[in-house]
Length: 159
Image 1: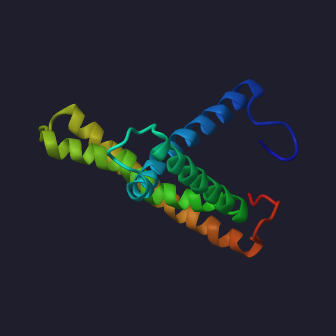
Image 2: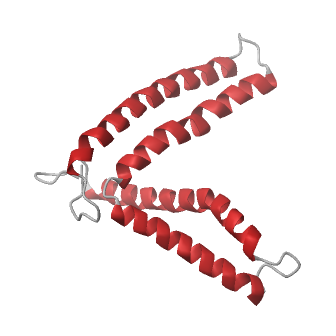
């Protein structure tokens, strides 16, 4: 939403969009945090006891809470966290979500080069490679331009 003037879309559209973005961020946070949880819990739990036994539940709760507090602290400390997320997203997630699945599908099933599926997958690969390249340049450029106004624990949000 713009700082001044009318919004570009009605509130009935912006509200659900914000809610869906938050739900997506929660889901992504849960999925990608599982690796960190697995690494931490390998060292702290007793595999012979149940997952919800007191011996295992207390360390899991403490370690997961400390991890989330650390991540929240880093996000609050770095006002340019959104810029970093943009760079990570374009370099890490676009290839994992849009390019590799199509490439691996075409390589695994060896569709004929005359099939529609092959060409749709190839189109998706080409389009999202272009989007990824443009996104990488623009997010790195934005990070570099915003670097002059960054201050730790700043309440000013950098656009």
